[in-house]
Amino acid sequence: MVARVFVHVGLPKTATSYLQTILWSQRDALRERGVVVPGSERRDHLWASRTVRHDPAQRRAPEHHRTAWRRLVEELGTSDGTGLVSHEFFAAASADQARAMVAELPTDDVHLVVTAREPLGLFTASWQESLKNGATTPMPDYGRDESPKPTAIWNWRTLDLRLVLERWSQAVPPERIHVVVLDPGAPRDDVWRRFADVVGFSPDGIDLSGSFPNTSMGVAEAETLRRVNGSLEGFRSAFDRGVYIRTFLADERLVPRRGERFWPEPDQVADCRRRGEAAVAHLRSAPYDVVGDLDHLRVPDELEERRLTGSVTDAEVAGVAVDLVATMLGDVRTLRRRQARTPGATGSRVVRRLPGGLRRLAGRALRVGRRRG
Image 1: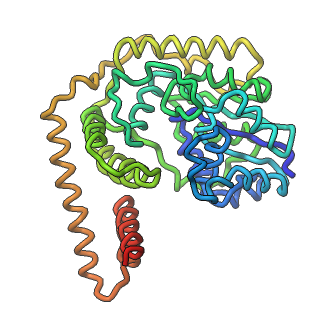
Image 2: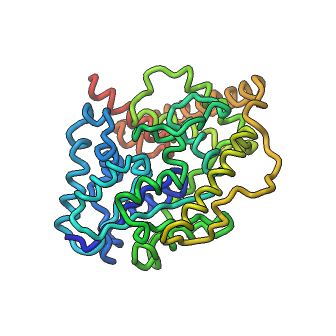
Image 3: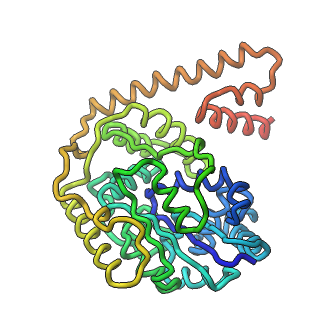
């Protein structure tokens, strides 16, 4: 069995996608360095988090989803070296669920890794991420409570560093909890190098070319997506939200517009500032291993001028929507032309030549067509 296990629980929107992309694309290289990322695919860690958090949706999920946590534990039990499990949704676990998860791991030497950043940027980014997952909540109504439910992801339950540490420190002692504080002025690979140092392997020679930043939308683009979500019907599955809303529409069509940046409401900014100070005080109250500068967990006293989401006009939304229609019409034409230029080619061959989200979109349509045929 592995000698020890590191459980990376987020927080959400703290370079988790960036880190996980590297971990999964470089699993073989990490295995050679004694680090085991268990599972057959990246989503195994997501599905495992649902089992750990007793998500009711897991009871209706396919067997492969429901058995993910068991398979991860079994692989760690038959492997050597250091185990590494990573998904930001573990942050929502209750103290009892955290204790149960740690107890099931095949070693007593369990460490927690928590990546963290200042709460205002985190809060703003998390609202956008909720929209990319199909939400319709306006910014002024977002983050107004601390949910008691371990299924609540886009909530202060997972975004407030102090709350997450208070629950998880009942399962893992503070001296084995490593808080990696993101430095907003550091090079892009800084968090990767510090993460590797915590887990105990050299980051040198690891290919980072497949990693990507999870970029934000502008204020008019975010409001347009929020309204589109309110008109969508039938886009409820995780696959549909991930491929159609998040990747195809948000990341590949709205983000590249590079719209204007924005802040939450003034009282939400004040709440973020209070939570940042509380997190710093909590970290100083116990022997946590803090990797980075605690001041980077504080909301700056002076903030640059940015728009509020309520300032977006109907005319701005209409302008974004018109551009979207034009772009997506071009996507359809590209698909049709490539099909026409490839006489006798299979649908799969045509789909493989398409870019990014359009390739995934067309691929899903092709699979659905085959099932119906």
